[in-house]
Length: 226
Image (cartoon, rainbow, N blue to C red):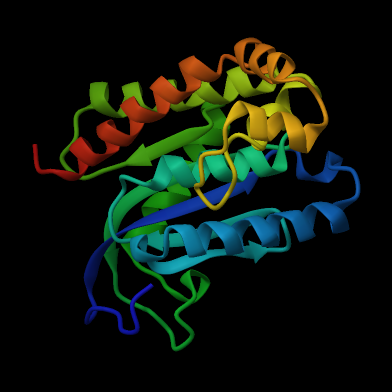
């Protein structure tokens, strides 16, 4: 995040997350500590992408951030849901203006149409069982539906993982953005490289990585005027 924010009102992208079935989560204290460590790491990794960094806004059930651009939003979503698996956050991403920034630099203290649209998108995500709902200016319904459905299918694939698959993918996709080899992951998990490779296959990692590239480029394209 930069040391200073633009003068209000300014254009931005509100990213909000809602922990699905949060009351059913076991050991909420442990989960909360995990989420806070995760957000800290993601904020460091994507520091140039924020007007207001990721932060919890309602216990551990909700989070928000204010982004300069949408391109990295899905990467942040994936990193969060990788960290908290088998728990899942549902997200909304909305374009708009910000007319209140507060004095803390926290997205929770900012307000404006971007966050209002984000709240509407989050409600639509809940009603339609989407894992991501987007609201962008001047985009047609087909583009919006493509992004939303691809993101939802991505999360549905994650839901098929087993406790043997998730760690092999999580350690292969660390929060700091580094790229360990399968052999390095195998040493961490005290298993064979073949076991890591098989876990990646069963977790459909190749499909997920391809989907990430498509969504990253799709969000980048949607930022541009139609």
